[in-house]
Structure formats: structure tokens, C-alpha cells
Image 1: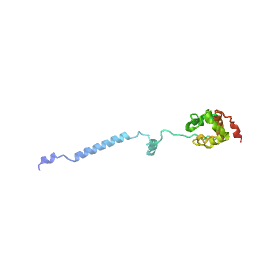
Image 2 (image 1 turned 60 degrees about the vertical axis):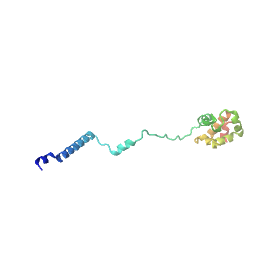
Image 3 (image 1 turned 30 degrees about the vertical axis):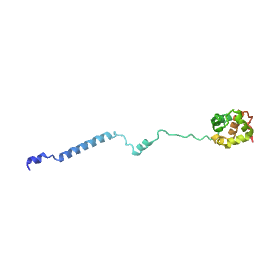
Image 4 (image 1 turned 180 degrees about the vertical axis):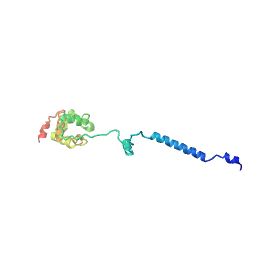
Length: 160
């Protein structure tokens, strides 16, 4: 081989030095970009994870009311009973409909109150509100039945 052939082939050392220099330059630039300013403490990885999975909002449940505030018959009818009895849903007698209430009124006040407290057919016990007292239910029964012609006194049952 001639001298000319040895010098025309590229050296492998030169490209390796260039590649190493490029990698080193990239590492320096990346470390400068990611470096924190002086005096700032790094945030622990656990804190970052907790911050990323933290819920958007927190729900705090109110403390339970320790004292039950009795409701009037009208309040119970409006808040609980009217859901079905105002529209006659699931064959519930409509409030104020004398024809629908007459056979029920004939059963007597105590029977109607018992049905309302314990539930009957599709009506759940206490209209689905277990927080209501029997006296509140009795007052609601009197309220609805009296609008259909009954003359029930809710106080009478409460005294028994």
C-alpha cells in the first residue's frame, strides 16, 4: 500500500471525540436548565406525588344535629308526603281528594297512623324518612285526611 491510501481513510478517533463533546455539551445544558436557583430547597418526591394526586375539592360532613326539632303536620306533608300524595303516585290518595280518602278515613285515625308509621303496600315506613317521630307522622296523617273531610286531632293520639 502506498502512503496515499493510509492517509485517505478517516480516523475513528476524531468522530468519537466529536460525539463525546456533543453528549457532554447536551448534559451541561440540561443540568443548567433543570438546576434550581441558589437558596431554594429541593421539593421531596413524595410531596410532588401527594400534590399531583390531591383531590380538587374536599368535602366536610356537618356534625350531626343532636336535638330533633319537631315538625308540624303541614311541614311533614310538604317535605315528605307531598312527593307522592300531591300527584297520586303509586296509587297514593291525592291530598284533598275526598273520594280517595273516604275509605281510608273510615278505617280510623289510629289505623291510618299505623299504616303511615309502619308502611303499607308501596308506601315505605314513615314515608321513607326514618328521622320523623311517630307524633310527626300522626300530625301529617291528620293534616292530609282533614283536607279530605276528616276531623282528626293529632294531639289525641299523641296523648295515648
